[in-house]
Image (tube, rainbow, N blue to C red; front, side, top):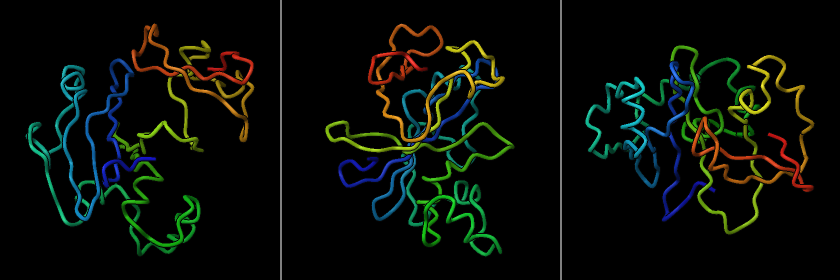
Length: 185
């Protein structure tokens, strides 16, 4: 799903502590070597308080490396951890692959507001994808308390995603509907 033109893509997301909005600030690709560059939402994120990563200070440059950039690799559990097999199993991985673990885990740390997502780049074919919904508290009015109890969606339910251009919180918002066109989130 995240492969386009022979490159495997991950997006770096930054969530603002001020306005709660999530910005796609960067793109990490893999095709023999790794490349990182900032994305078009970078400027908006800067205005909202985002600080460029120390390793990637020039927003115009495309950075390349033969190995996963240390700033991203350091977000992953050490492959020598005693419980690494348990961690890999949690993410459906049979062996340690830093890029795949980054993709599956998102590499979110409690010390910052950055994480990775595996984007959907090809909508021409049917696909299955596990994901978390963000912004549910705005729609449900639950303000982050017991939001999971406010909707009737469970694992295995078929849902449809539709762009919600009129959303006042996020112009990129996605509406989640069931097969009866009932808005779920």
